[in-house]
Structures are given as C-alpha cells and as structure tokens.
Length: 268
Length: 364
Image 1: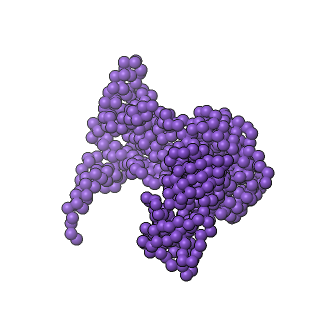
Image 2: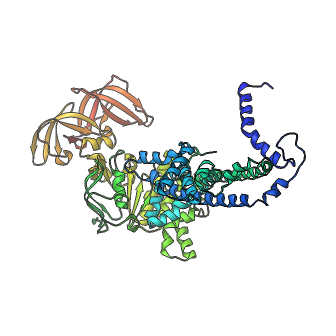
C-alpha cells in the first residue's frame, strides 16, 4: 500500500487527539497505583473506591445541579433570542446578537475574572448560584446557535397557516412551533449540560468553598494515590459525554429533516 | 344575469413598509362566488393585498370589508377566509388527516364526525384514502391538494390562493388549473388567486385585477382585458401587442377618426380608445392574431395593406411573421395558424396584410 503524506498526517493527528482518551480506561481498569506501562492486571477496585469518597459525591451532586440548572436557563434564554433573531426585525439587531454571542470567543479566564470582580464588588457571596450565572453566560451562545438553526428551518407560513385555521398565537406556538423545534431544544439542553458539567475555570473562580466535579478532579491530582480513581471517573465522564452528544446531534438532525430543511452546520 | 352580491370591498386601501408605499389606494369589489385573480409582476403588491384580506397584514389607511363587515381590528384567526400558501405550509409533524382536520380542532366534533368531515374533504380533492400518510412523504401535487382540503374544510366564505401552482411542473400546473376551476364551481365560494402568470389568470378567472406598483391598472373579465386593455402596460403584460404611431384627426359623438402609419385613415369606437384622446402623439395597438397575411387569391374581410416580410419564426402549429407595413419604421408581429397546404413564406416576400379597424385599440 502506498502511504500518502496526507493520510499519514491525518493518522498521526487522530492518534495525537484520541490516544490520551484511550489511555484513560486502560489505566482505570489497571490494578497498579502507578500510572505507567506495563499494565499489571485487570481490576475494578478504582471504580469501587469512588463509592467511598464523600467529597466526590458532593462534587458530583453540585456539578449535576449546576449543569441541569444552567442547561435549562440558557436554553430558555436561547429560545427567546433565537426566536427574536430569526422572526423579528428590530433596531441594532446585528449588534445585540453579536454581543450575546461574544462569550463564545471570549477567553473564559476573562469572563471568570471579570465576573468575580463584579460579584465581589456588589457583595454577592460566592456559591453554586454564581457558578450557574457564569455557566449560563457561556452556554447561551451555544444554545442560540443550535436553536437558531431549528427556528430558521421553520417555514413562517406554517405559523400563519395555523393562525389562519383559527388558532391563537399562543396555541400556534404550542401546537406547531414547539413540536417542530423540540429536537433543537433537546439538543440545546444536552449540549449546554455537557459544557457546564466539565467547565473548570469559571467554577474554580466562582464556586467559593463548594467543589464541582472538574475542580475536585484537579485538586485530586496532587495526591498520586488518588490518580487511578480519577482515571476511573474520567472513563465514566467520557462515556457519558459521548452518549449525550450523540443524542443531541441525533435530535438536531431529526429536527431539520422533519421540518424539511437542509443540514447547515451543527457541532458534530 | 343578475349582479352577484359583493363579498369583498376595498376602499382606498394604503399600505406602507417603512418608506415604501406598497398599496397605493386600492378600491375594488370582489363578488360572491366569483373566481377572482390578482395578476401582476413580482413586487406589484398583489400578495400584500391578498394578505390584507387574510389579516396577516394590517393596512395604514382605507377599509377592507368582507361580507359587509369592516375587518379593521379583526385578527386572521377570526376572519371568514382561509388561505392556501405558496409553500403549502403543510404541518410536517402531522399526518394528512391531522393536517386536513386541524381547523376543526376547536369545533368540538366527535371523533367519528371529524373523521367523516376529513374523509369528505380528502375525497373532494381526489386524495381519498390518503389520511394516514405522513405529510412530509407527499409529492408537490399532493401537498397542494392537502392544503386545499385543509382550507376548504372550514367552509370559508373566501378561499385565498397565493401562487398555489407556481411550484408545480407545467403539466401538473395545467391539470391543477382545471381541477381548481372544477372545485370552485362545486363549492361555489369566492376564490381569490394571486398569480404572475397571465395565461393562468386568463384560463381560470371570472374577473382579473391587473396590478402594477401598488395600484390596480385594470379590473375586467379576461376577454375585455385581452381585447381592450386600457393602457400600454396592461397590453404588454397580457399577451403580445403591436404598436404603431397614429394621430387623431377628429373626434365626434363617440367616433374617433385616426390616421395610422401603415394602415391609413380609420374610424374607431370610443371603447377602443381608453382615456380621452385629444390630439398629440397616440399609438394604435393590435394583437398578432388580428392581422392576416393574405395569400394569392385570398381577399381581406375588411381592409388591406402592403407589407414586406422581415422575419419568419416557425412553431409547428403556428408561424410568426415579423412584417413591415409600407410607410412604417418598425416591424409588427403577425401570428398565423399553419393550415394544411399553405406554404410558409420566405423572408423578403412582398405580401398583402388583411386587418380590421374593430380589432384596434388606441393608446395615449
């Protein structure tokens, strides 16, 4: 077989990208405390050990609460913004939408530091709520991007048709618009949940004394004996992320197919 | 025939989009039970006017009345009209039956009654037995029929059709034209069709309003519109019309005498000269089929002129001759049906052309 330069490049690229992730489950099921080859034997004891750590449980609980709340809030805000930007014309629309989308490209450390300064200045105590605030800020641009594509592929005359056939604007939204953008909403919820769940910087700055999962993982790396447990935890998180993102993409595509549109963009 | 009662009345209707004056004083009436068309090029305001009837567009000045009631402040969901959209707007997440029965959701019918009504409506549009199909799996023509059934099931006083046939291919379009005419006769309600296709409007309508730049240029039945257009713009938009310069020599008691290049002097009825013509530059217009290239031995019914053939376009059943009448600058088009045994003439042939003053229309 002739090895093409580009193929070689692509192969190396993929190895570089995914090899660390493949190593994760390998060491998670290895029964040695030291993270090194050769592997010494199969064991599930690191997974069992997770059950005995109360701080980990608290961190998981906190992170799930933050992720669910941020996902719901940012998706609701995303629905409003996406609907407004695709359906209505208003002054300074481009500027307003640009500002909302800005956190997408803004370094997170800047968002985190400036939020911290503002919150401390206002005298707001740091808590899970302040993390949620930060996460809603960075998740909303993603939800708008997903939901805009859902709203955009919606033919405006569908709404008018329902209205014409006797429905009120509210029942038209419930009967026609909501079912047709529902796949987009589900996809938006899942993606913002995933973003929030593994977000570190904002959580680190704004969580106060409460641990979140990424912050907890980072802190555990100081203790060599804790590393295999983190590998096990990482394995679970990788699987969870893949499942969630696949579901999200499935719903996004199905939504576009159902409303008869063409696939334009998306994240996967 | 007695005059049908008025179904829709526009009184000086104006509509602005920002600075753009989309409807400029529309005044017209549409009668109950007629097949009415709004015809015009894109951007002439015909769709906007249709949408003011449906209630999707508000108006800035004037009155829109439906069945004697002022529609100001009446929202689209409370108007006795239903619409067939250009994109059909079939709800993609519902079955055909759910789509068709959508408007009856609020009527509080029993399941059996609803199914019966839906079945009836589907049968009317020739889709009997399609109820269980998924809406997004239908062809263009079938979507069209579902949209029709969905709009007609509510038994509206007026059915509004926004370029309903423009997305279909030519054969399907011609088929649906006939279907729509049949359907309109069957249900007997007022149909208002928006189209940019003059042929479609002529074929289907009882009356047509030709619109340009937010105004109705002429409102008449198809034959009047074709034979007696009231302006050069209308004449050019509907079919082909030739124009030659002319001067008015006298006007007396409804008879107008003119001197036209290539034709000589002729007398016209007042109806042939829309807009009072008093002197100045006018032109005389005539359709290609109202002139006849005369072959040897044939005699004209009315008048004759001499001409030279400058261009010949052969169409199988028809031949188009561009001929220059003696004493004129530019050629005019004559369309001739190709009869068996009659030769197609060559470019440069001298020929006699037969015509009649009755087919002429005078334009300012």
